[in-house]
Length: 326
Image 1 (tube, rainbow, N blue to C red):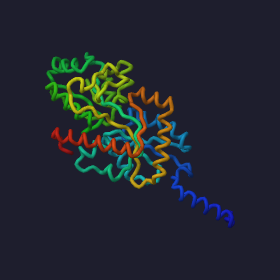
Image 2: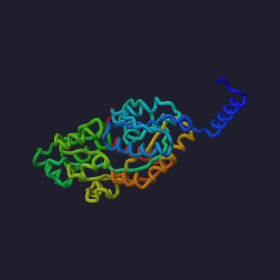
Image 3: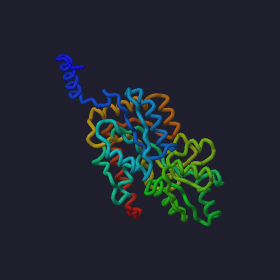
Image 4: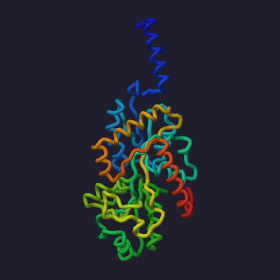
C-alpha cells in the first residue's frame, strides 16, 4: 500500500522522536536481548543469569535469552561481546574473572575491558571458597590439611573452574601456608569440576559460593573456608581465610553486566534500571541470596570504580606471586 503524505509525516515524526530520546532500537522493535555467559549450563553463573533473564523479559517487554559461550575462562564470551553490535541488544553477565583477572594472566588477551566494554551495573558480590569432596573425611580446612599430609603424603590436586584464576592463586596460597605440594587442576567451568568432586575423582575444589552452595546444603560437598573480611551468612560455620591467618583476601569478587563500547547511554540506563527493579523483587533477592550472593545494586559509575579497584588489588597480588602471563 503506497504511503500517503499524512502517513509519511507521522513516520518521520516518530523517527525524529525516537532519535531525540535516544531510545534503543530493541525497545521499539521487540527484538530479543542476549545475555552472554562465559561458562557452561548448570554452573552458578548460568543459574544467576537465567534467574535474572526470566524477570528482565517482563520488565523490558522483550525476550531475554541467555547464551552460553563457554571456554577459556569466559574469554570466548568476552570476544563475542567485543564483536557484538553496540545497539543495546547484547550484554555480558560476568564475575571478576573474565573482566579483571583474564587480562592480567593472559599474555595477548584478545580484548581490553577498559576500551572494548562499558560497565552497565553491578548487582552482587560473592565469596570464593575451598570445598572438600564427600569422600574426604574432613570437616575443616585444618582437617583437610592433616588428611593430605597423612593419606596423600603431603600431595594433592585441587580443582578450579579456569586456569589463571583467583581460585588457582588460592590453591597456591594454601599450599604455601601449610607446606603442601598441591597443584591446581583447571576445568572448563564449575559444573564439570563439581561433577568430578561428587564422583570423588578429585578431593577438593576452589570456586564460588553460588557454585557449591546447593551441594553443600545437601551434604555432598563441604565448604571449609571463604574469602572476605567476614563470614558468609549462607555458610556461617565456614571461617574466612583471614581468620585462618591468610592476608590480602578481604576484597570480594563482583557480579555485573557489561555492554560493547559505543552502546548508547539511554540503552545502558534503561537496562540498568530494569536490572535494579529485578533484583529488588523479593523472590529474586531471596533466590540470589540463597545462592550465596550479597545482593546490592551499583549504578554505572559506582560499579566501574569497584571493577577498577578490584583489578588493581589483584594486579599487585598476581605480580607479587611471580606468575608469568601465558
